[in-house]
Image (cartoon, rainbow, N blue to C red; front, side, top):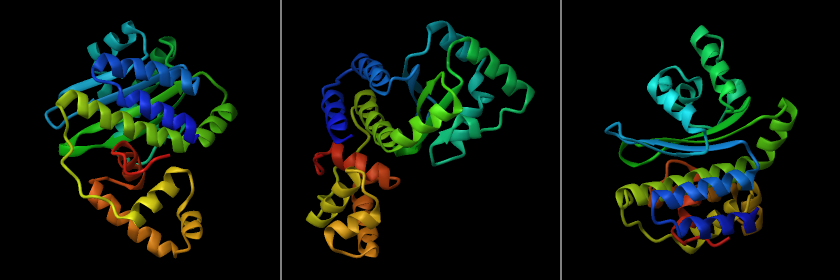
Amino acid sequence: MQKRLSAFIETLQRAKTLDDLQAVILGLRAHFDVEHLVYHSVNSTGQQYAVLTYETDWVDRYLEQDYARIDPVVQGCFRRFHPVDWKNLDWSGRQSRAFLSEALDAGVGNQGYSVPIRGPNGQFAMFTVSHRASDTDWQKFTAENVAELLLVAHFVNHKALEIERGTDFHAMQSLSPREIDVLTMLAMGLNRAQAADNLAISEHTVRTYVESARFKLGANNTTHAVARAVAEGFVMI
């Protein structure tokens, strides 16, 4: 995972335009070997931006019908902070079922996994992968890729904000050597208990360093802190 993630970060860092970011999204679709991949952002003023792999006809239809107001994925992510498997959403309503039928006909895929992202100044974004697969195969895919999907989602959001608005991020404080050590362990896929064991410190101390680093980085959660630490060059993996 570390080698693949490092290669992705290098490619993403070279992106200078929205077209460059679209190329990154296409590359990520191939990387994860999924049917579709979508990044969609809405800022505090309601302006929207997206890079995605859906067919143009479906995108036009979605916007024309304002499907975001009934789409269980959008509505579900807006109320959550954790990743959402589409199978766990409520598709029982008449409008939701009709929307799902149309989405399936458009080739969206019967399985999906979305990561809600809350950025600076009220920004809300979603990073989604979808595919045609059995429930068993999809459960295996998400279990094996969840950590990487979370990090990639925040990396893409960071780059999109940088490209779209110059940057929404303020200069941040330097991290201490121990904060960097802890975030490095987490970036390598270790949990807090494993990081504590490797660094010969208590799990409580690990939590303290994580919270301190998160505050300095202006991150919403631990995953966001790790992503920003890597993106800013504090952590090398």
